[in-house]
Amino acid sequence: MGSCYQRVVNCIFGLFVIAAIAGGALYFYVLPRLDNLLADAVRREYILPPSATVVITRGSLLDTLEGEVARFYVDAEEAKLDGLLVKDLRFLAEGIRFDLPRTLISGQAELLNVSHGQLSLSVSEEALEERWSEELASKGLSKVDVELSNEGVGVSAVVDLKLTEVRVGAKGYFEVDGTDRIRFHATDLELAGTSIGIAELKAAFSTLTPVISLGRFKMHVVVDELFTSAGHLFIETRSQSLEEKIAADRQRLKERQQAAEAEAKEAGEQQNAYENGDTPPDEPGSDTSEV
Image 1 (tube, rainbow, N blue to C red):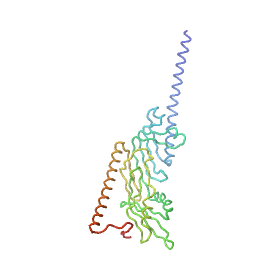
Image 2: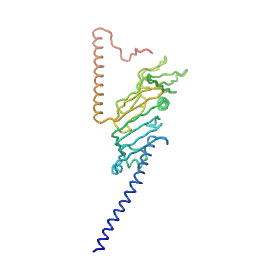
Image 3: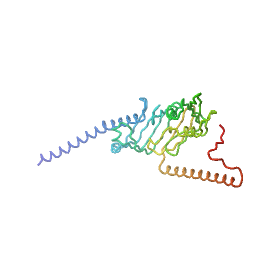
Image 4: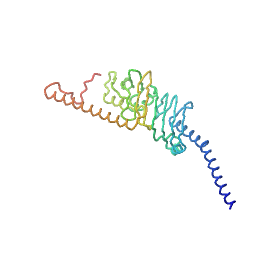
């Protein structure tokens, strides 16, 4: 009887020892290795240079095994987002959830959600020229030149008119287009005295590929800073709660409705003036702009 009891005690003690060894291996070997794998996945996802800093802070053991980390921080002189070279990338995120199985299999940082985050980066003129050159070339425009200054944004390119080459372009500004994308908004065309179709040129410069899509960071964002200076576009964003996002969406919808109502009112006033014998409205398709 005594020997049987002793065997049970020894068996339980052995199980405790095995559990302790397994726990120690998990804590001192597996979890740090998992941290390194996640850090490497972040480096590959954003194509970070070796000098970049990636710091991951774990939460509980269960959270880590479920793909959740308490915090991570990325600090890099340069990175690539959607094929665009960016500089001075700073990304601080908290409450991050990864798709851990896919991250481990693909080697890419498969982000699912970020509870809170702050992001800042800059984009150079040269990076934007490279991004838009192929796109404008497909529309017959070459030798793309981008100028970023305190006054705004200028994008120009050369069009081949058989006998000569003429540089045409547009001035404007960067804006968040109501989604997570930042894109160029053309306001003034520079036609250099050519007879090129205005509508075609405006379409070419107004539909340029967005500079960047912030949706890849898996958080609702508010753009706090978006300005150009000394050859660079500077972007600073922070995460937005669901309540803030709903309020912002409602405000944007309200502004669009007000703009549509104002446009309809102006059109009605012009029509009334025409019917009363005043100055007639512009004929459809007429172009009264000076080139």
